[in-house]
Amino acid sequence: MLKQTIAEILNKAVEKAQKAGILPTFTPPEIVVEHPQNPEHGDYSCSVALKLAREARMKPLDIAKTIASSISHSPEIEKVDVAPPGFINFTLKKEWLAKQVDTILEEDKAYGNIDAGKGKKIQIEFVSVNPTGPLHVGHGRGAVLGSTLCNVMTAAGFDVTKEYYINDAGNQMDTFRRTLNAYYQQYQGIAAEIPEDGYHGEYMATASGEIIAEAGEYLGGLSEAKRIEQLGNMGLEKMLGNIKNDLKMIGVTFDNWYPESKLYMGTYQKVIQILESKGFLIQREGATWFKSTAAGEDKDNVVIRSDGMPTYFASDIAYHYDKFIDRKFEKVIDIWGADHSGHVSRMKAAVEALGIAPERLTIIISQMATLKRGGEIVRLSKRTGDMITLRELIEEVGVDACRFMFLSRTADAQMDFDMELAKKQSAENPIYYVQYAHARIASILRVAQERGATDEGGDVSLLTSPPELTLIRKMLLLPELVETIATTLEPHHLTYYAQDLATVFHAFYKDCRVISDDKALTAVRLKLVKAAKLVLGRTLNLMGMTAPERM
Image (cartoon, rainbow, N blue to C red; front, side):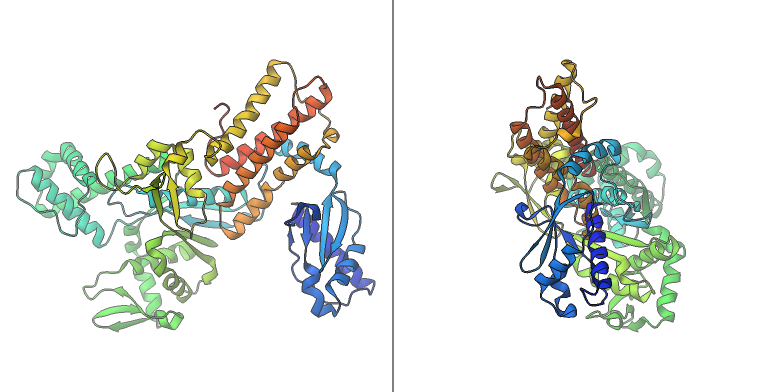
C-alpha cells in the first residue's frame, strides 16, 4: 500500500540523515502517514518531525526540511514539500496515478485485499440472540455490523470464523418450555395460564399452534415432564429455523452455530476448577462468586447461584475458555447489544484470570436503532400490534437499504432509521445514490458495446485531467480503508467511502465525455470507468450489498 511505501521512504530518509550526521542518532517513532485535510497540500502528509523535536533538540520545521532533503527518488512521488510547523507533504506523480488504473483492473475482484492479518485465526461472534422469539430491529443492526466486519477482516488477510452462540440452557429456556406447555394445554381445552414471566407475543401462539399441528398426537402420549422437554426441543428448532431464515434474508450466514449446552459436557467444570485453583472463586451467601475485584473490577460477580445453577456469566467464561484455549483463536471479537454494556469489564477480568491476555478479546457494543417514518417514531407492527420484526423491516424497505442504514453510523452511537428515506428512489437516499452510480457505469459500458467501442489498447498516459485523476485518487483509497477498518473495527467508514466515490464519479461523468469520436480517449476512459465500476462494486460487496447493472 502507498501509505506504507511513503512511511518506508521517510524511515530511510531519517536513517540517511542520521548517517550523514545531519540528525542526531535516536530511534524514530512509528511513522504515521495521513491525508492532509486540504488537498492543495498534496496527497499524503506526515508529522513525524513534530514528534522528534524534543529528542533531536531541533525545531520541527528544520527537522522536516532535513528529512525532506534526504528523500531519495521514488517512482510514485512528484514532489515533497515542507510546511509549518513541521509537516512533510507528498504529491503523487500524475503518470504513476494513471498507471494504477491498469493495476486495479489486473487485480480485479481481489482489489482492496491486503495481507495485514497474515492468516491469523480470529473469531467474530455476533447476533447470538436467545432462541425464544423473532429477531427485532436491534438484532438486525448487530447482524449487519458483524457480517460486514467479517467481510472486511477476510479481505484484510485474517482467517475469520463467524459464530452464533445459541443460549439453549438456563432460566430463559426453562421459561420458554413452560410457555409452550401452557399454550399446548390451552389448545387441548385445559385451563392454563401463560407464565407471568413467559413469552406472550403473537409469534409464540403461532409457533405453538404449528408445533401442535405437527406433533399433537405424539405429544399427547407423553408424561408432562417429557412433553415439556419435547416441546422445548421442537420450539428451539423452530425458533432457530426462523432466525436462520431471517438472517439469510438480510445476507447473513454463520460458519458455526455453537450451543451453550455443549459447554456443560466438560468445559464448564474444567473452567470452574481452574478458577478455584487460582483462588478466583469464593463462597458467600450460599453462592459461588468470581473475585472480579482481584482482577481490577469494582465488584465481585456470582457464577453459581445458591441453588447450584450456573449464571450466564459462568457459561460465558467457559465459552471464552473454549474459544481461546480449546479452539485456539488468536483474537476474539464479540458484538453485543446495548443491554450487555455493563458486562464488558467483568468478561475482560475473567479472561485475564484464565491466563489469557485481555487485549486478545474485543467487545463491541451495538446500540439500538429507532425506527421512524419521516419524523414520527414507529414502535409497533401494523400487522400484529407487537414489536416490529427484522423480517417486516426487510420486506418493507429491502435488504440493501436495511444494510446500508444499519451500517451508516458507528456501532456505539444510537441511530434513527428513517424507513421513508430508505425507500426513496432519489439522491436523498444514500444507498440509491451509490447503486445508481454503479448502474450508470454499467449503462455506459453497454452503450459502448452497442457502438463497437472498447477499452482495448487504452493508453492510461492520456488520463491527465483533474476529474480523471481525482477519480483515480479516490479509487486508490479502498485498500487503505480495509486496513483502517481492520485496525479500528469500524466498518461504518465503508458507507461514507461509497458515497464519496459515487460523488467523484458523477463529477467525472459530468465533466468528461466517455464515448466520443476520439477513439484513443474513448478507449482509455472506458478503461477508467470499468475500474471505477470494479471498485464501487467491490465496496458494495464488502458491505454485503448488491451492485445493480440497471436501475
